[in-house]
Image 1 (cartoon, rainbow, N blue to C red):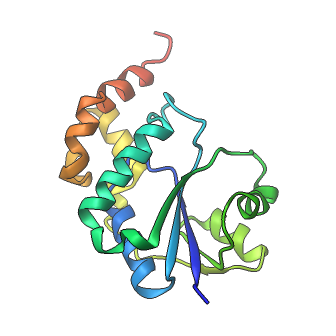
Image 2: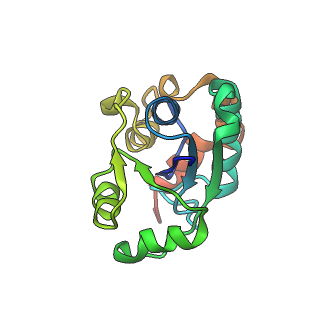
Length: 175
């Protein structure tokens, strides 16, 4: 039987840590991986500046470049939030093919899946203190160097869609 896992994330933006975690999961714990683009309905906010379509495009391009040997074992699925942590795992069970495990470093995600009886795997973190999505977005807003955390293959795309300018404008609020 194929062991299928899920890897939820918001990918705001996709970065090296995501690729490392996906490869780790496919090398160490699952045969197939459903990569969930979470909060698919959210965009143009400080926490979720990119649209689901932009994230799908960027993540797909990144995986085709950095994980091409794994593509036949990966499915990318955008999923809207339901704003009910207690029901979230059941919601995913309804939307996705059967899965057996979750791969996540997020403590809330781990608790929700453990409580629902799933195996939970925590991938090793890649420069998390510097290259998490939250840190990347904060660094962009503060005018720091963020580009080193984003794979070059998608950097031009982020610049073309105005990722940094969008975040900076959103951070100004209603001034």
